[in-house]
Image (tube, rainbow, N blue to C red; front, side, top):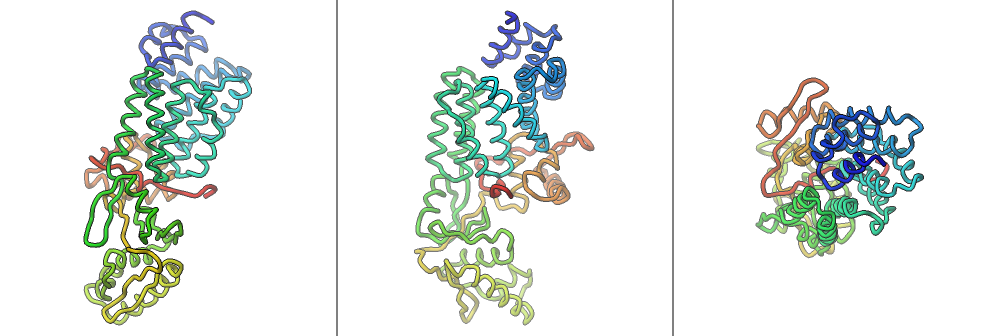
Length: 406
């Protein structure tokens, strides 16, 4: 290989893009263009990096095989960083297959990690776990091992497996030390700090206190009946009743859980459900209907009993009832959770990640911008949205979660 190209490649692998550019900045052959694109990406000049990588792919030609595939993988990474979730995933899968056939295991693994990270952003945890399980971490170089363990930790955090996440981050820290790349070590430290921040709040029994991820994990494994306001489900010892698509029933379940073991008056329920100061006969009739629906939905886990004043929740086997709430209660918590990763998002990418309409996302962004919690950069199709991270908490429980194939 050309000595200058080889030296530039080693500099990029060590995380020194300026040294790489010093060696190949004036060259415009295919390999130099590709390395220049990677260097510009490491420096954060992403638009220029994308253009250089596309020029390199064209210079390599359609029959170049692994060289063009590596350019595609690099372009896919830029698309992920810029939250271009609509970037064609099939191109990345084809590039990964090419690299696997050519024996380039390290870059093929990197492509797989990019696929998994995209699945995580889309909330497809089952698919992400299946994809990451196909990799042999023992065969990866140190830098790739860091990426692998960070992905494993990300899945564990979304699954509320605190001990598994900490173990993965410990392995990532060791791999980062072997790699000797400061940026990787800093990324591992940043993710590790999230594990010590509150991820949810425990509400019930007259208390409202923050919980770390291990505390949430222990709570869900306990004998308590948990009304999960983060995922909109009611849980008890592995059994779940999903109410995400039945917001009225979930609001009633939460109100009853917050008051347990006491009951909730009909007027209080009407005020919460119908925004009425006092319950008239029409409100009472509607409340009876909704309570009947809630009683049927929660039948496996709890009873909903009428009292002289209102209604009370009676768990069948649980020792207590409590609410697991988001660390910050906000109507736009899911949008804030995605924006809090520090990257700039388009409204279309947010809609894709949340599985909702772009118009709904735009209304949420407008409301957040009016409150000063989000800001727009650019205009038209180039507009991107950012928000400062919420100090002292992690918003992982506010992120979307979808089943495989959804």
